[in-house]
Image 1 (cartoon, rainbow, N blue to C red):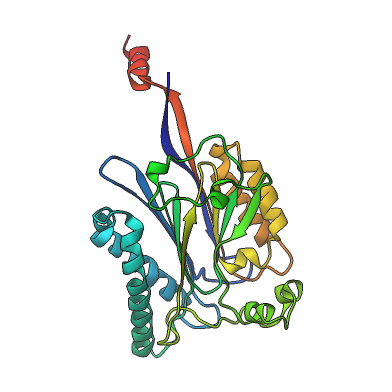
Image 2 (image 1 turned 90 degrees about the horizontal axis):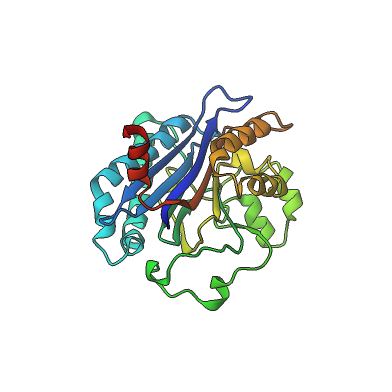
Length: 305
């Protein structure tokens, strides 16, 4: 008899890149257990604005804020019927509080403190996304033999979302709050032209610059062995999606290589022509750890006789 326990394959890498002297990117990943031992994963990427002073202070402020936020309110996630019910109410306030805090810091230092913020929460087959700026989250999915039980879900899954397409797909879950993306949506610019446009780094909104903020929030379903990618624009402006897909394909059956692959991808981006920005990448896969029942007892017998 075999026992399946939920686990994670994770690769995290950040680098200042080949040009900048300071890494203004920051990332955070935390695992929080509920009362029965199931883990909620909380991850974020914050990209301090390269065009503003003190960008690293802005992104570090975001990480420090959510470290304290999780320490103080993490247990509250499981007091509601589902953690996402709590997040729906708490995260908009958290984004607004952070925005005000960075504006206050900017006034105090007489500097502009700007940063993107893109966060992902995974729990029992559902994801929650909060986002402002142009960092990204991608969701890689395909048909899997194992699926979360319906009892793990907060909401019933519609038939069209439960049955995934036969081909593997990479979906961008976030929407870039950038000038070029706005032009693409309005039909004024092609996606290809946007990738090299001089204004491709101009943001329409981020934390710490304007009092008015309109973060993007969404949620959906995932399956065991799906892969999530979080990255700053230093990655997605250089690394074509097809190369990202190829890298993910190498990981689908190699859970131990996530850190190695994340390191290699960041090295690839850093060595690429046109790479000038900080580079941050997170690869995350929920999976099953399968082992014989009584595994600990058998290991103990092996060593103790």
